[in-house]
Length: 132
Image (tube, rainbow, N blue to C red; front, top):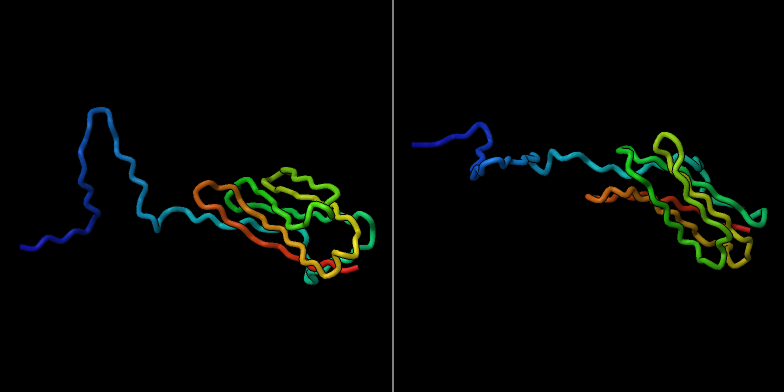
């Protein structure tokens, strides 16, 4: 005698007033995509420090609408101001003002944009090179 199953077989106990929470197989759970950087849109990933301070802005949106967090790798001694703000339509912005300093010449500035989905946070890295 052979037994063939065409549907999943669920075996379990039933308690009065209790239910079963079936979430489906792990491969059918929604994917958490990384945020998308909307601004700056640039083919040349360099910035020239012309003014003092120089302000950079990064705008990002998460495809699932999760809150977005920005992390810059700029040493604190060069950071004049840093503001992260939520905007309309699930767009988040990060503004950073950088002091003009010759020690930053050639420094690769990075902004890591992460969604704050507690189940599986995804991130994207945006980089540019600083020049005098």
